Amino acid sequence: MNGYTNWETWNVVSWIGNDELLYNISIEASDYADFVHRISWYSQGSCTPDGVDWESSVLNRAELDELIKEHV
Image 1 (cartoon, helix red, strand yellow):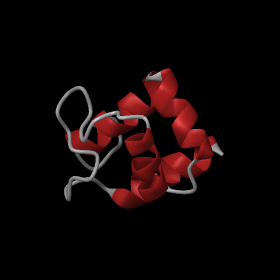
Image 2 (cartoon, one colour):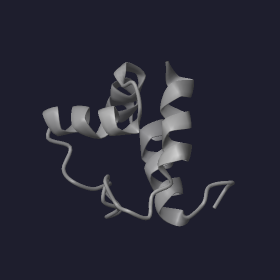
Image 3 (cartoon, rainbow, N blue to C red):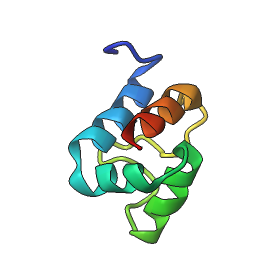
């Protein structure tokens, strides 16, 4: 999907890039694990609005870490 390993990773990237609150949280995060920890403070739920668990084992963490680092 659009250069990402799988649909789930693309979906998470899509939500982070297109939701103002999630984007702002990503700017403050040091990596994807920190982002997931921070969204719990805002009661964003355990998954994207499309049902992808923020901590799913199928997510490509390296791609998500790179995304977070680009936002800094």
